[in-house]
Image (cartoon, rainbow, N blue to C red):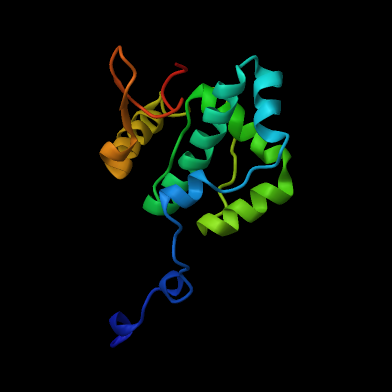
Length: 148
């Protein structure tokens, strides 16, 4: 169709500005969310808070890149708990401009390739802002890859 290339894709016409990572990290949580992650899954209070933060970052990573993402097992637990807070989850999705549906599988459907790609994408997208020295080694903040 001649002239069609002059039209913007529909999603660009209605595209809302994405929040910053700082805004995502500071997005208010339901009071019971992080404690529930800790209690239901045997994490410390700090680990529960870190996991919820990393679950928010995983969803935000998809919003920023529009690429498939796959969490670690630990972050997936926090994501499951986030889904239980439906009003919060819906409002957070609106905040990051995309609703990420959860599609459970019995294990990595692609042998873990999407998870490995997600780790790489996380590092590339968030860069050195997320690196800290734990005394043992440099690791990304929080618990996206492992529990510290």
